[in-house]
Image 1 (tube, helix red, strand yellow):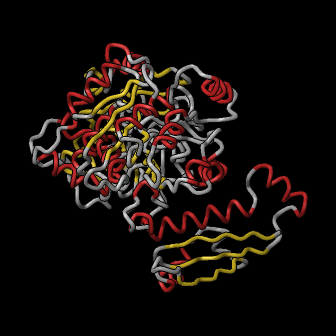
Image 2 (cartoon, chains in turn cyan, blue):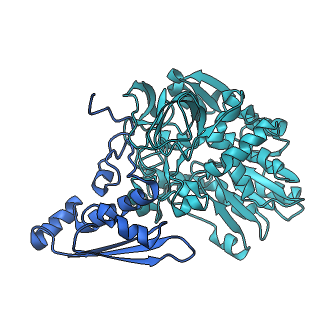
Image 3 (tube, one colour):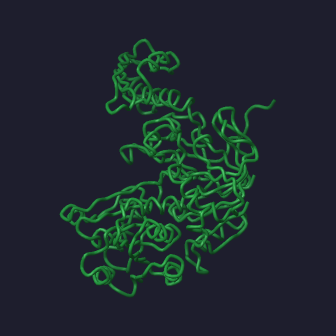
Length: 390
Length: 122
């Protein structure tokens, strides 16, 4: 089959690889009809997540039709149309029992590797380095889906792929980011990053009752989409001082909650701290650079909540712990527990409460994945979200 | 040379005790002393294992083993993880990078995450 493979920093190739086969009894093989490039794939592309191997198949947002099931899968049949959550979860350990699926204790065969970096391991994930298990991803014609009796959500309506594909990751991720803000009537929510996850977090914050949502980015085309498609107000951080403007918009309180939908490659004006982060990242003394997260901490109101859904990999310097501690800030975060959200969010899509496809700007054949990574990375051609068709 | 390891398994102590013979070495070895206690908060059972035996090759052999990642501690950790997977998930999970499943040695020598070509034909 054809698959998008990581071949080194800033290099992906669509290559011929063997077709997947059933390795575990609870596996299914899915013939992929739609798959997407995630902002977090750029962290792999750019070489910031450790433990990638040359040849790794990328992709953790995909859907398609079941073409084979292992003997342990009884809820799916050949021909079923499914969306596959990016975390792989067994459904039986204590983490899964608590619906913390991205922390499944059994799905990451390389848990020992992750424990060395993080203290404890996360679940296995598709196409996202060997720290999360070394699973082949879904930017390909086929994928093997472990624990197929727990993860995949059946699509039994005639909604087109692009309306349900993002149940695999970015819509539940964004929704969980908004849910972690514990939104109450009157709340003002600020979202750093108007990429696909940020835009869907803005829409989700409104779904959950936010009074006002404020988007922070530097690309006008993204801020425009935030205004037009979600109703958010916007701040271009290259034009104004974000903390001053947020203070003004909230009459000095600060946003009730701040969502970081940026992650470890945050950009800032080319100040000394950005130079410091980039220099330390370059020699791998720091894996994560943090202007967005630092600013979000300083911005949030006293006693407010910081919700981190942008992906971080390891260590960050200059973390404003004094602000966080002295001002009673609650910090929440996590890789999304997609299996917990997929069905209720599918219902919201079916009821017409939201159509997550508003983030899509590019649809291209799988063979054009290498170009699409470049366009997405460089934010050319007003790119926000790329969907690939195998 | 001794090694010890512990894990929480979301199963009853009775079930764990009954299935202990299915564990892999060194968890299944006679030298492995396994103790079971209820995990607080209805989270199953705390499994603690102490392994007390001399490795092959004596002291020098142990040092060589440690360097090459075949020492008892890693083997015991792996065996306990695999046993937990067996009990909770029903089988040892395989990935493309770790096609043999959890194996500390393989974690340092991952194969690329692309499909494993079938090794048998029928």
